[in-house]
Image (cartoon, rainbow, N blue to C red; front, side):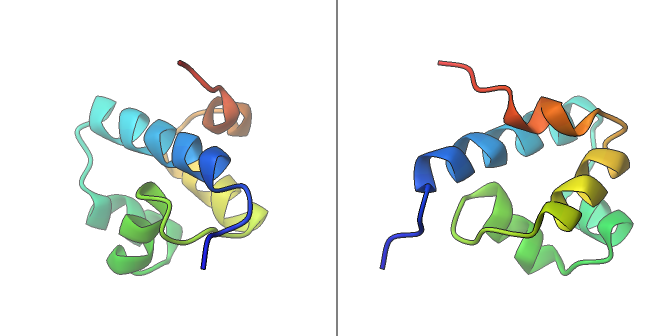
Length: 75
């Protein structure tokens, strides 16, 4: 079953990955800062799962970036 807005979630996941790598942070370190499992963080980054806006806000805060950065889509 395909997730609604899958392409958008792929872009969000790529942005999370980009900013996480930029800060030399592991998925597990980011997950711990957001109080979610490492498995769930991996599923968000790879667009296997979606998450709540609250979780996206936690991720942005943990990455020290404005929430809007997660929605900046590049080609």
